[in-house]
Length: 137
Image 1: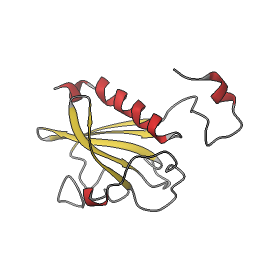
Image 2 (image 1 turned 60 degrees about the vertical axis):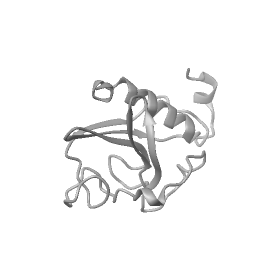
Image 3 (image 1 turned 90 degrees about the horizontal axis):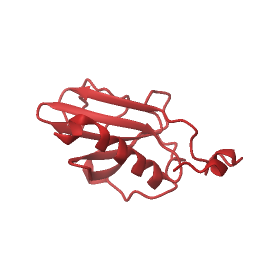
């Protein structure tokens, strides 16, 4: 449930969003790392290697680096995929939490603009993934 008081907060870092920016992908999402071997990618940053995964903790959206942060393989509802925080680049997915998975020959990703607490944004993304029909196959 959205806390109205937090929407009125003057502190932008702890205020929950009054609306969300969401992108849903389906198809061959490509990328030089991760899911495909060709260099065409739906994302304007390199998909991070699973070996670089770190714990999902609050306080990371302030990350302004140029590389995505991997949170490793996760199970969201009935699907298993990878969770990353995109770098804060000037692109559609900049500063987004992205959950990406494959079902058969089709790849899917849901990208949600992250907010603090990051664990709350991840829980919201998990609920969105569970609502996608392709995630329930």
